[in-house]
Image (tube, rainbow, N blue to C red):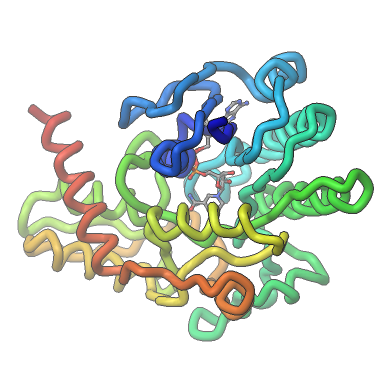
Length: 323
Ligand code: NAD
């Protein structure tokens, strides 16, 4: 019999890629999301448009002991959405309700393995003040002090999944994603994250003009190409290791240098104008020692390779919109 999988958040960026991967692996896949995928036709065998905050809907969606369940649905966005403070109540309340519902229904219908997408935003601000030396080893998460309510919600939910493992014998695994980017993700509208936002700005800038970069641009991050993220996600769920574990890249770069890389790839003559804007922590990088040890995983794409593919896709999106 075919194995079965459920992807919560299948209409989103990472969820869309995950559905494709599970289909390639021969699974029967049900996707669920409050909206359909904006950039690609879903490959799920069944796609349910519904609100996972609704307990009745979640009970309907989790009507069997799926072999694999991936919980990626969340109220989230980039810095412009998460770090202004304007969306805090919704971000916390909406995502919390989804996680409570999925865990409760998953336990009752005997789900075998459940993956939860947490975030590098759980790490304390005090370890991310030096852009050259951030510390995001998994065991540095306490004493807790995430710099956003989004991070606090993720941290609480991580603990919730681990508590269900302890008390109900479930097999939930938790990954902390570090800035995932790639094709078929949000690139405009206010919820886009920095790689997509910069690709869009460069794609739409006239040669000889400038693009705006938030902050002084010296804040640092690492970025993981979505194909690598999917490989690590599936390997984690199918392993006996439950985490929490980082899924990210250790190739750290400043935001100004990321902008310069995209400008170079575009071949245009564009300059950078640093303007005030939401920035998040000063420095963040994935620490991959634990995942290398437990899953023997490391990213296959360099930042340049992933950004080249992403820029080309966003440029094409931009061109087809402006026709
Ligand atoms: P995304 O916003 O593209 O996907 C999330 C999906 O959840 C969206 O399609 C959204 O419609 C859906 N959703 C939100 N509320 C819902 C509801 N009430 N009912 C049903 N569906 C709902 O984001 P993504 O980048 O694909 O992220 C997937 C997961 O990974 C999220 O949990 C996110 O917090 C986590 N994460 C992502 C990153 C990243 O860099 N992309 C980094 C850290 C963690």
